[in-house]
Image (cartoon, rainbow, N blue to C red; front, side):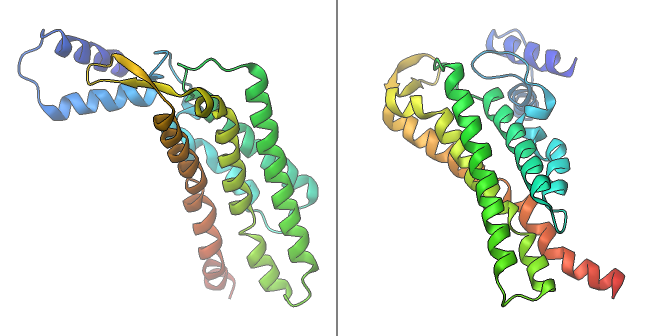
Length: 222
């Protein structure tokens, strides 16, 4: 109902059918519409795969990846689950103006899962074999392993999935949302910005908990 009211308000405003209305009301309606509907297809994005749902629905996988002393099976499972969620987020928020084959999405998904698992397992093995680290330091460092694995895999996922845009360019619009051409420069900027966003997005989720956990453990367990 809130979405429908927002759409009607924006449509009526464009048609000049509304009276006095504040900029704040218009921006609020636009935020609701942009958060729920895909900008190209106009279809509803499922809550777990919206950008606004990344944190609320991603905390389960984050918790799993930060569990202490993970087994190899545990590492593989949580990295797979996390990258599956990321892949579905990327697909749900994809650039739908570009035709993409199913194989490209599958390749991007496989590349993300593989890279995340390899990095996570490789760093875990390296930490375990480093003799200079005592068990406590090893446990603390181990908690940071999911961050580089997730950042690398998420960036690779976007790059693979949107490689076609780098080759062919993307639509460029004027202020009235009319297509005025296709640009490879705009595509490079869009893909670069999205890739960097995916690389930095996990930092608050996977950096802050490992930093505060040692202090909480000392506070509650001495």
